[in-house]
Image (tube, rainbow, N blue to C red):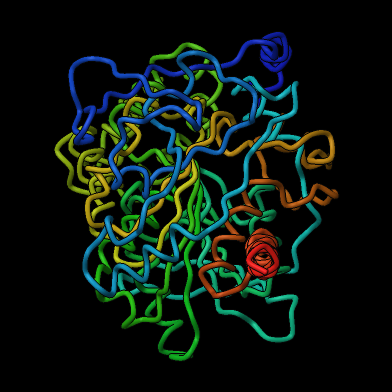
Length: 489
């Protein structure tokens, strides 16, 4: 029963619809964006002055409804305007990338009234937004360490492909999960080929080597990107991912650094990323609801995998400690840490959390995170200082939950047979319903389109308005000249 707690607790979540999650304010210096020990809230009003520096305003945007937010829901997150991107990164190549980042017309996320509560947005989005079955073509590649990785390819629906997008799912998910499929379909419809990569042990068969994957496991994506580039050196490679998969992709881009172009990697877009893993683990495990519903759900598939590995690879970890695990932190400390050579879960989180890697990213990267994400401690979200010279744009939304981002009843469609197997038998089977891509997958796709040079609807409208403005100014100047001449006569 992998997800049975979700349905059992869903009614209680629905009772919380009228309450909006808020987060403690971040701490910014009034003039230098350095963290201070006192709270300095920043007004949500666009007309109010903001203590964010030009560097911060260029990096951070908040997409939020026009209504007045709760007093503490958005502090130190709002940019009233974006300054010249040249103030962000002075070097010439990076300035072009910053122009790409700052010119992206981000959309506002407005949740329906019944999904303003974070847990409702998260749970309903996970269980009741099933898209049509994808037409994947699976390939199994042997990895350099003697294991294998399964990749589900989805071809572009347009005649000419824009490039290929490497897509990573989240913790204990897979390429058939509704969110992964909605992401893949959104990208395919926009003209991208998609390579939906299964983390080791998540594609329906146990992997051959000890362990599997973790927050910082980038070995497979390095291998896949390099091989795809060798197959077609002229093809652009983009990356995307959510949650744990998004963390891996950020780390991957940071490890490439200035060498990204050598294998054709041009940029990426990720969402709902636990970039500060230490504090996120505490929030996931120590909050009673989070621990029971989310951590408990993950452990119901993680612990059986560990049991099978204990039989195949005896002595690598203490299976009795795994059996006693009640939280994700305990599992990471007793399974991930010993297998991958970390001294503890804290050592693992410090070395693999993507927040420390943001400053090393050298291709355009969009990160979308919800401030009310129940998996993520909002006070630990990245600041401008964390990003440093990285070519990264962070977009915070007030609502969205963890990978929810529901847009209304139109977002929902359910395959009840697949839902039954998931909840009562702990199995993921191929589902088929009619849910659309949704706000978050569409927004990530829009950024990759923008990165590929496609003019988005909002950009075209802006250019049209600019042309109209210039034409009006021309007529105004002509009229002024004519009337001025008549007065002189």
